[in-house]
Image (cartoon, rainbow, N blue to C red; front, side, top):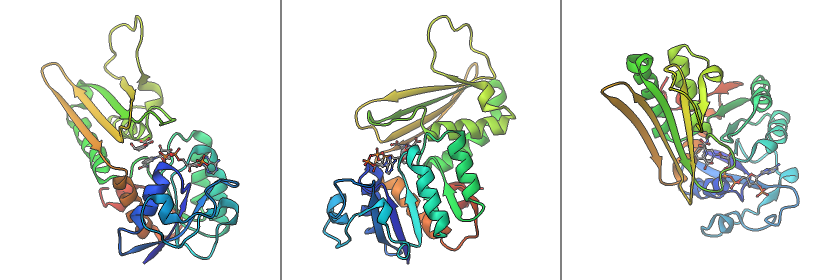
Length: 267
Ligand SMILES: NC(=O)C1=CN([C@@H]2O[C@H](COP(=O)(O)OP(=O)(O)OC[C@H]3O[C@@H](n4cnc5c(N)ncnc54)[C@H](OP(=O)(O)O)[C@@H]3O)[C@@H](O)[C@H]2O)C=CC1
Ligand SMILES: O=C(O)C1=N[C@H](C(=O)O)C[C@H](O)C1
């Protein structure tokens, strides 16, 4: 049994993570915390998640217990990362991180923390997207050098970062396979007199609309044929279930930085 501490419990993912904790027999909810001073402090975690009362009161981040959860799960926003990591390092807690939109300094914080605690960090915890990462690499190896590569992603209107972390991860996987530097070859959206497309570029397009949970397509278009690899998430439970799987896997691992592909044995 793995006891889970959910950070950002009132967020879209936080609520679904609480719900998911009660759908599995190998995990249980240890605590669920929210921002200091939040109006959600003290209410029941189950009621916050829209399920039955669970008799676990939502706690303030600064008062979260250090002796209850085996693994902490963080799907919040980049500005919360430093405090969350510092707490996990201080209390030797493994952490599963799903937050996207991190800049170089956020990624450096994760690298540094992984010297003392085990961390899984992935832009997408669904099984399907992690399989898609492998398929994108395989497709790149066979036809990537002769194809125009475009990545299209669509998400709900509330999403704050773009392109999505998953789109960037797909781009990184493809660029890595083709020996390209994504920072050099990425093109983000197009407008005006762009000139003809350069073969070595990898294009990114973003849609933000309604309640789309998360959709990603990697297009490999040559002259005469094209392959499109598409994943569509229809429920946030798919991310939550993956994160809980990662938590169970991580619990007894040594310090280090791990990927969801490793959790799923896809690498
Ligand atoms: N890796 C994956 O598989 C997935 C990743 N994500 C990523 O997870 C993240 C969260 O997504 P989502 O749940 O939709 O977002 P929400 O905006 O619904 O939730 C964000 C949560 O983070 C909290 N938070 C933000 N800033 C702070 C802070 N400085 N201190 C403490 N708490 C803070 C918010 O609290 P408050 O409400 O008080 O501001 C809220 O509870 C995003 O980066 C998203 O891209 C999402 C789905 C899947
Ligand atoms: O913000 C979201 O919702 C999601 N974010 C992740 C990302 O940026 O890739 C994963 C998923 O697609 C949902």
